[in-house]
Structures are given as structure tokens and as C-alpha cells.
Image (tube, rainbow, N blue to C red; front, side, top):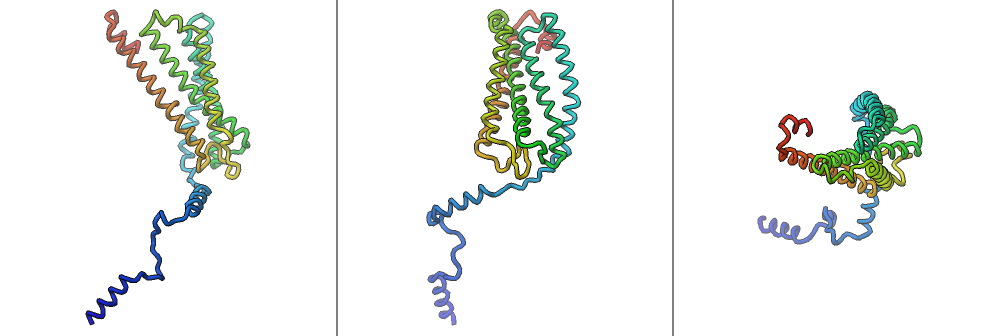
Length: 260
């Protein structure tokens, strides 16, 4: 009995069961066509993401930003107008004016995004309006960041190199820098948001899933150029200003903290 059982067991182990094929096929034995079919099927899958989870939170955030930001920026523009008429401000006036204009343009798009959120992430105004509003939104986000960097760099030059930087810190240089920032930001955002950021089937605006490889590279570039680089510039200028003020013997601690 035992010998017969051992012989039958050894036969089963030696002979593969043809009715049950192996669960996993080695990658080397799979045909290239099967890989292509798998990749094609994965690329055609649509992502049904729960887009309504952020409706309430983003609506409140956008509403508060719009309610506080619009009158604040208008009052700041009014103050800059009077400062410019009095002949003060210099190149800082140019940078701050561009910063306020970019913030205002961005604020004016927020009511449309609130309507978009309240409509269940469905853009009711068509493809052209979606592309235009999305383009304005992105341009002004990164233009604001760049103008903040210019303000920080100008402040650093004024404190660290007050005499040698006079030729650079002029209104003409500030105006040229402002035009350069707007131009580069326009081109950069244009390269990332074209050919389209509108999903005509689901009426999604700036929310295409899965994203194209071009838009993914654009978002990676925005992290590098719109976050990491500005953080490095602001950190360096602040540290440089702090070191220069600490080395100045003519300033008291109260004056140093006031300048910083």
C-alpha cells in the first residue's frame, strides 16, 4: 500500500498536469504583441476620480480669498498711485505694481472656478473659455512668484550693495525685467497648456485624467521653477541681508529687526 502510494505520488510530481497551466508565465516567454496590448489597454482606461470631495472646502477657500483679496489689492493700487504721483517708490514701485496686477487678474478668475466646483466639476462655458481662464490663472500664479523674487533681489541689492547697485536699481531696468517676466511666463505656460486642457466628453477643465506626458512634464517643471527656485532665491537673499545687518556696527538690534 505504501509502495503503491509512493509510486503514484512520484508519477504525479514527475508528470505535469496538462489541465492546469502554470499561473505565471515568464516575461521572456511572453510575446511583444501581448505587452503592446497591455500598454494600450492601460492607456485607454479612464480614471473615475471622486472629484466632488473638495467642492465645499475649495469653495470656501476661493470665496474667502476673493472677498479679502480683491479690496486689499484695490486699496494697494490706490496707495501705489499716490506714491507714484509723489515721486517715491523707485524700481520697487514697478515690481509691486506688476505683482498687484497679476494678483488681481488671478482673483478675477476665482468666481468662475467657484461656479465650476458648484456645478459638479463641469465647465459650462466651452473649450475656448476654459483654455483662456486656465491660461490666465497659471500665468498669474507664476508671474506673482517671479515678481516676489525680483522684489527680494532688489531689496538685497539695496541693503548689501547700496552704492554699486545704483546703476542696476533703476526704473528702466525694473520695467525691462517686468516685460521679461511676463513674456517668459506667457511662453512657459503656453507650452504646457496647449494643445488643450479641456475634456469635451466630461466637461472637465484643467482636470484631465490620466494626464498626458507633456502636461506631466509641465507640472514637474512648475515645481522646479515655481517653487524650489523661488524658495532658494528668497532664502539666499534673506540670509545675505541678515548677515550684512549683523556685521553693521552702526545699527542697533531694534533697527536690524525692523529692516529684516
